Image (cartoon, rainbow, N blue to C red; front, side, top):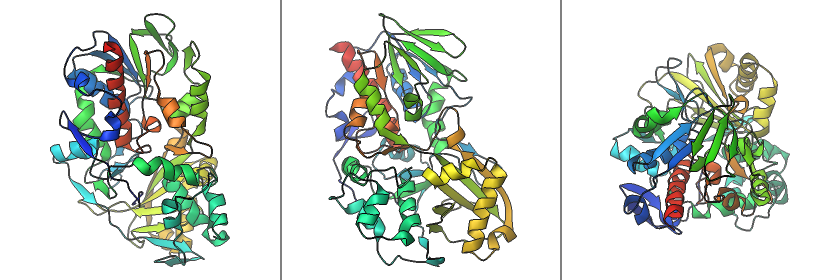
Length: 448
């Protein structure tokens, strides 16, 4: 799934053996991270996803006291894996490594992690038939038209003369960015990715993305992670910050790094005392995050294409055995936006599976049901501490990510993929970059 058809390559700096886009370090002094005085206080990190884990990893390398509070019963955030369903492990969350120029790719290289270029073939369900190409290349227009107005993908497609027959193709393009076509901005989708620098190729892991995060980052900080600890309040009114969890346990710190998904911040699950600045909460509201799920379908035969895009129930099906050593027949249904909302509304995994099988039967003349073995549904929409896929750029987005990511009172720091202002939002490596960035910001605030 090549998600980036255009790129603006920027120079890469190597600091401490980690590759970092130059834009990431444009407003800080990197020498303050690896040399000079360190921070003597306590840091609490809220969230043990990629950003939180990596922030902890860097703090530990500096000998700084920290603790990670994670609401869920497991760490990893929107990465995860299942074993036993197929004869190879499956990524329940983030799956593709986007490009070779990032902290993640550097970790993969240093650890000899096995990755495979995903150059799989694409086909489309269009006008009730499977085709190898579309009459008009709508994908290129959405990704390369720098004159796109600040309107939704759905409206932009109409403006460009694409009729209703392209509706599900438009949903596929929008869904690849985690959104419904009626929600994501054609202009800001392009504008925000002008700084994308990690590379244009997509790679899959022989094991899983989660394995890389666990073995290269989480293992170093797991003793500092406290699971099953949802945070409900952060009181930063005094010299010492008080963090209260759902069981009314209170933790104290000098600094707090907040890495929860944007849905949690938008829902005000965490009360801030004093209240966050209005401009920050307004910025949160402008960052979108729609419903999202992954459904793994196991079949006794491989009747399907490597990729089939454009379904009305699921706009993106992909062969999940690509890049794996074993070869069970696993088809991944990658479902975002309104399609994910609809399937969630069906109420059960069985109903979701049946809806997908019916669509595949239509595409492949009944072969799906005939060879169906089992399914596994990972619905991130209903995950209580995630509630969606990943962030996207809404109509009227403006500088929302920049404002949302700014620290508050030199006490609160905001990280996570939605807070990436370097074009790498929606990615694991983008989340990791923000964890690194906020440690830099925290240390810079200490020595200023």
